[in-house]
Length: 239
Image (cartoon, rainbow, N blue to C red; front, side, top):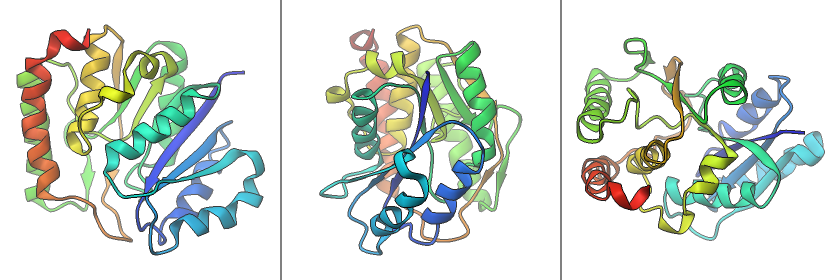
């Protein structure tokens, strides 16, 4: 049986974690959920543990010893997945900015004809709800910048709602993943593209979080700007 895993990284997501887990399982898809929590002081990890009896062998928690960035949390989750038999592995936010209803069509694309599917805000115009115009423009033009520098045919390279076939993650050395923020999202897509995997975008509507606090920082943005240049200059290393 081809197994599917949804990885949800968390840090202080107590307002959202129970609801997002329940909503993911309510899709009716045959899947597991792994929460990778960075020792959230608000009790996010405990909330996951309290939910485990409801989902028995389908809900898991990995508690990392420190908060060291989104990319590091996902790498932890990827390693965990690759030690098991998962064939389809998703990245997904805890704050409902990524609608769990989109998992079904994205998973279908992976099963039929693509290796990496991106839940894209920009493949059909700009589909973002409740962001200030300044942040929309920053994100949109950052994606254009990525396209310009890398020539990668993805309109939303910084997107964090992503599904992978197992073979994609197996082909990428997790020890050599360099970035932790927006640049991490670009790095994984770029390395997959360089290795000739098929990438496809699936249109989604991205809704800014209602509960909890954003983890966005200026350091993450600058990392992305620098990271794109680093990736392009080291293109031949990733083949």
